[in-house]
Each structure stands twice: as structure tokens, then as C-alpha cells.
Image (tube, rainbow, N blue to C red; front, side, top):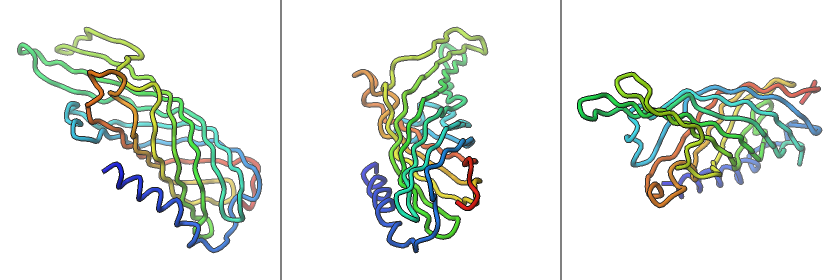
Length: 214
């Protein structure tokens, strides 16, 4: 499954420029700020270890655009992405146990950005996250355990990211999605075989500073 996703993303990244027809994109080096909100899902064969395997998420980024051609640019983003919590609920000795985790990550993304029509673009590329995972356990509604920076995840998460949207002057609206290949449950032998990955969707708004036409 992962190989099929990689093949599709790579084909899209390489093929889109062939269909674009030389429209105006970024004409100069540009900087901007982005805010995004949307759901995150746990995927993989072990996703049901968490009964609530989806969560609301957010992203805040500083962005840079480096023009390459009249219709293509390299985008570099740095910021913070996180979720508000995944949770697993189960019964133990006739008591209800809720084990929840929240994830945050400093994220670095590099994407190839191509305008396929006037004002309409597609972007794709890799993302690297330096994560923090916080865990909390409650028994019958009473917190019995809480720890920041639990260590059962990798120190570096790798995502494939695709985005598309509409840009007019300095205002950009779009949808951004990322699939995590290396992340949770891979730090130790005990967790290495757990098949859980994160799939993110973020509706976002970007404001590019100092632009009129592009």
C-alpha cells in the first residue's frame, strides 16, 4: 500500500508540469504565514488499538517561495503541526480505562509547486517532523498517569505531502494532506511491529507578504 502511494505521489509531482501552460506563478522570492485546521486519522492494520483513532488537528507555518520557472517554484515551510488527542478505551477489572495521546511536531516541508491554470496550483514533496508525544491514562474518569515526551515513537517522522488550491495576489486557500511513513511505535523492538500511521488533512489559509500580481 505504501509503495502504491509513493508511486502515485511521485508520478503527480513529475507529470503536472507537462500539463501546465506557462501561467504566472511566483515572480520573486516571497515569504508568508499559514494557518491550517483539519482532521488527523490513524491508519494501518493496528489502528483499532485506539477506539478514537481520529482527532482534530492544526498547523501554523512560516513559508518561503523560491521561483524556478514562470510557473513553478520550490516552497519551504517551517512550523508546528499537532493533534488534540487520540484515545483508546477498554475495560480492566470492571473499570473503564482511557489511554490518550497528543502529538506535536516541529515540521520542515519542501514542496515542488506548479500552477496548472491561472490561480490554481498543485504542490508535492517530503515533510520532516521532530515530534513530541504526550500520554495520559484515566481510570473511571480519574487521571492516574501523565507523561510528556513518551519515548515509543521515532525521533524523526517522515511524511509525503500533497497540496492543491487557489491563489489570488497574496491570498492562498487550499487543502493539504500528509501521510506519515516513519513515526509512531518504531523506537524500540517492543513497538517496531505496530502498524499505525497518521494521515492528515488541513484546510489552510496563507497570506504572502508584499505581493500584488503573484
